[in-house]
Amino acid sequence: MKKKNQKQYLVPAVLCLLVICGAVYYYLFSSLSNKKETTYICVDDDDDIDSVTTKLSVIANKQPLFAYSTLARHSNYAENIRTGRYAVNPGDGALKIFRHMKNGLQTPVSLTIPSVRTIDRLSVELGKRLMLDSIDLYNTLTDPSVCQKYGYDTATIVCMFIPNTYDIYWNVSMENFLDRMKRECNNFWNINRQGKAKQMGLSPVQVTTLASIIDEETANNEEKPMIAGMYLNRLKQNMPLQADPTIKFALKRFELRRIYNSLLNTDSPYNTYKYPGLPPGPIRIPTVAGIDAVLNHVEHDYLYMCAKEDFSGTHNFARTYQEHLQNAERYSKALNERGIK
Image 1 (cartoon, rainbow, N blue to C red):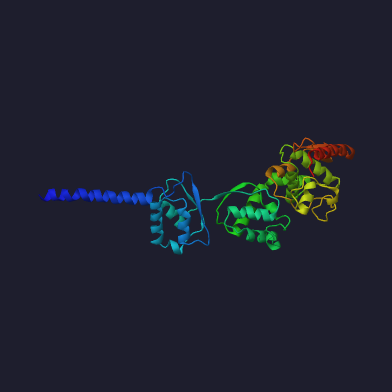
Image 2 (cartoon, helix red, strand yellow):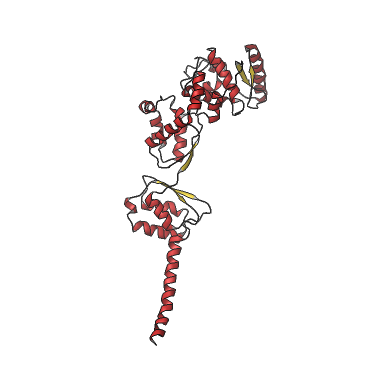
């Protein structure tokens, strides 16, 4: 009779235990996310326990979110919130997500440095991808003392940003971010690239500056070494570069399709019609293809170039000014026919 009574209570107890285990598993280990793809939760300095839960609620299933909230409130998480960018994968339970966020196990950002024209644009774009404030970043990059620390000035600091892709933590500090960019820049300018620049009589900054002009002249990577050779010929002969993109940069009018003679007298050190040699710094963050085009330029004797009249994005090259005028006349005629002003 006693054994029979024990069995009578054992079955309900086991069933009750199974129900409890199932509930615990469902709340703690079933997928917190209701999305089919990985999503990311960014926790910044202004977040508290409630705002973090609110951010999760946008992508979370109800019961796992309740479990996450319970774990957070019955721990010291509220006093130790870790900033960062956290991956929430399909199938990740509340317990796993909570442990990652509590311990700061964030997922790096795959950050591609954008090939933009100005420091303010660079600051805005980086501010979209990192926790760094875009205004703070702009103020830092335009601070002469900061630029000097890294070996640049306010006109050349963009040379430190090589437009590759880097894995970097979203909540990286300003100093650590700039230190990382400097290390990556040093790695990029290896012995091979430095040797080629030295052989040409140019510094890495000068190569980068010329590359920025070439990138503005064409998006055709195959033609870039030809354009580089032409500008280098001009530099060797102390001829003005007369690069139209530098006028656009001086005026900050990047929408211009034609550069009229009236704009060529713009008084700016970036005006390569008015001032010989290279401008004070890059007119954009150049591409790696642009930099390598300068370092591996084509040797030729062309001194002039003009956009082709077929609007292919490539150029007609000329050895003499008279030949150049003929090319320019054809291009001007094509512009007029299309009503481009």
